[in-house]
Amino acid sequence: MKQHLEKDEFRKLTTQEKALRINLRSDIYGSFAEIGAGQEVAANFFKAGGASGTIAKTISAYDMKFSDAIYGYCDRYVCEARLEKMLDHEYELLSERLPHRIDNTRFFAFADTVEVLNFDRSNQAHGWIGLRFQLNPHSQPNDCVIHVKMHDNDPLQQQVALGVVGVNMIYACSFLSDPEEILMSLVDGLSGRRIEVDMFRLSGPDFRHVDNRLMALKLVKNGLTKAAMFGPDGQVMLPSDELYKKNVLVLRGRFRPVTHVNVDMLLASRRHFRREADVDRSNIVVLTELTLNDLSADGNIDEKDFLHRVNIICSLGQTVMISNYFEYYRLVEYLSKITKGKKIGIIMGIFALQKVFDESTYSNIRGGILECFASLFGSNVKLYIYPASRNAPPELFTLKDFEAELPANLKSLFRYLMENNKLEDINDANIQNLHIISDNVLAMIRKGEAGWEKFVPHKVEDAIKELGLFDYPAKKEAVEVSTASPIGK
Image (cartoon, rainbow, N blue to C red; front, side, top):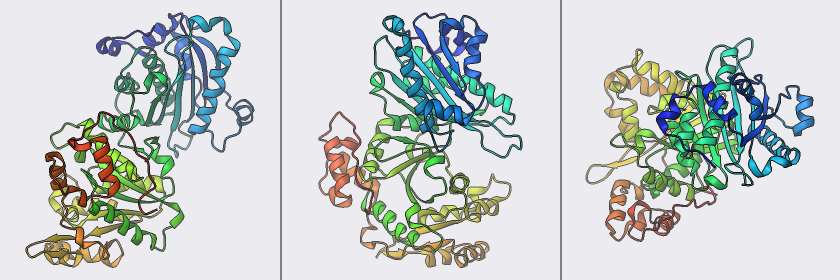
C-alpha cells in the first residue's frame, strides 16, 4: 500500500536516504535502462546499500546498433519516442520473467536517454526521463515523463544532477500522491538552476484526475522552466521539438474570454505572415500565449480561471504557450534559439506597442531601449500591429498616428524599423469589432446579462454555456477540453 509522507519529512531526505528507503522496501522492484550519460540513477541505489531489494536489472545500450536491436529503430536517440520504446520493453519483461513476484510487488521500469555536454561545449545538454510504475500489485501502471535541460558547465556534474533527478522521480512516484509535490520534488537537492524541467506528464489509472495543462502552468509558476506548451487536445508538448525550425506566429493576450477581436487579430495577421517571402506556408505554427502576468492581477493565479481560459482557446483548435517572459524581447530571444533563424511574427495591439516604445520600461536595463530593441528586432522578427478605435467620434489609431505622437528622440528609430520591414499595419482588420472590450464581455457573462453572445465566436459561446465557464449561471461541474479544427481551417 502506498505510504504518504508529510512534505517537511520528505524534504529532509537526501538523495542517498531516498534511495535507501526504496531499497529497504520489499514490494518495490524494477529495472533501469539508461542511455547517454552513464548509469547515474542506478548507481545511487547501488551506493545506498541493499540494492538487491530494488534492482532487477540495469542496462546501458549505449551503442546505436545494440540499442536498435533491443528497442527498435528510431530516427533520433534522445527523444520521447525512444523513451517510450524503452519503457514498453523493460516493463513488459518484469512480469514475463518474474511471475513469482507479481502478487506482492509493485513493479517499475525507469528509463532515460540523454545528451550531455560535448567536449567542445557547443551543444545544449538535455534528456528524456521516464518512469512506468504500479501503486499496488496487479494494478495497471502509470507513467511519469519529463524532459530536462542540464545547465552545469561540466558533463560529470550533469551526470550527477541527472542521477539526483532520477532518484527523486522514483521516490516521489512511490510515496507521494499530490501531483504538484511530485513535480516540485524532482529538483530536490539541486541548488540554483542546474536542471530545467520544461515538460512534465503524469498519466495512468491512478492519475486520471491530473490535468497536465495545469501541470504545465505549475512548471512555469514554480520556476522549473520559463515556458511550457500544450496542444488543442490538451496534450503537453515540448517547445524545442514543436517549434524547431518553424515559422512561428504568436498572439499574446488574457483571453477572458476570446472575442471576435482576438480571432480577427489571428486570422488577419496570419494572412500577412503567409505573404512574407521568407515564410514557408507549410511550416507555420500559430501560438496563443499567456504570461504569468496575464494570469494574475494580484500575484495569485486562479487555477480554475486558467482552465476556463484554456478550454476556450482549445475549443478553437489553438496551441497554447504559458511563459514567464513578460517583456516581448525576452520571448523573441527564447523563440529565436529554437526556430534557428526562421521568421517569427508577433501580433500586437497598437496600445501594447506604446509600452514597447516607452523608455521607462527599460530603466533597469544597462543598454536601455537600444539593447532590448536589438533583441526584439535583431533577429528575423516582425511585429504585426492591430489598430484600435479611440476618441469620440471613434477614430482609427494606426502606425501613422502612432509615429506622430512619438517623442522626437524616438521618431528616427521608429522610421528605421518601418523602412526595414520590422513593423506592419494590419490594414485589413475588421474595424466593426473594435468596440468589443473583453473585460466588458466578461462582466456581462458573470452578471447573466443578455447580448454578450454577439461579441464572441459561436464555439466560444457554446463552450461557456455548456461548461459553465467564467461563472456563467448555467454552471456545470466538469471542465473538459473541446477539440476543434484550428482557426481559419
